[in-house]
Image (cartoon, rainbow, N blue to C red; front, side, top):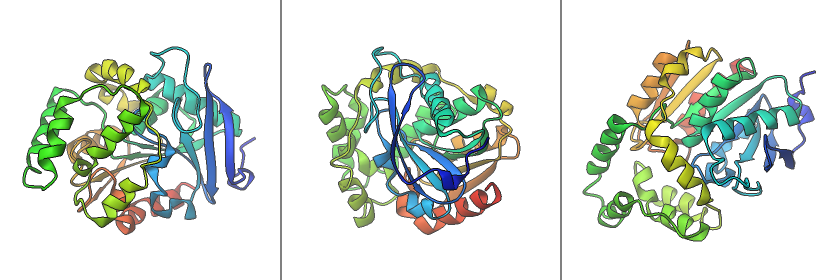
Length: 293
């Protein structure tokens, strides 16, 4: 029997992952159930902030992926592939007792969401792909480099760009988080008080550095585009118009290949559109969630 949103009580919970991990999640809000999967890989639900108050219209299950936040890490150092993360989403769905569930995937979490939709057909009531990409191949990385070049006049550019280009492996989780926070100006359309306040609030969060090595192996050959035509769940693709890493071109690649998918491009926003343009973000998501409640 399908669990109704009202039966998902607010608060923290734990669920078994698909292998040896234990997943931590938090439930808030009311409305259609929406599992929110953050990006990274290596970042927990804290990096989603409050998604511009989206739990006013959805029962959000804020998931800490394996090794992040309150979730444990796998014994296998290579068990951080898209397939592993997607299998954890399925384990969480089963734990919640839901026949079908909504899924929002942000950045790397959007890649997980696409993997999940392909691997587990019929289990999604709706899908939101937020500032993500179906591939980060050589052509996509050329666009990333060009987008960074366009920011050359910014006052922070000379410190941030060399650190991104160096792409040095962090020694531990604390160093990984500090490095990520230092390059955050590149992820916003405007590095203003709003963006800086959001990033400052992440100072006590966690970055699970161990996930990076597995992703560095998977990323160069990861290409979900040939499989996107198999997704037939109601889908909304949302992207900040000035996202330098998961850009509008990538958003079109997904929207054009997924049957019936809608595309929302949010102006004057980068990789975190709900932070920079909360009203426009909600205007894009609220009707879609209402239609799929």
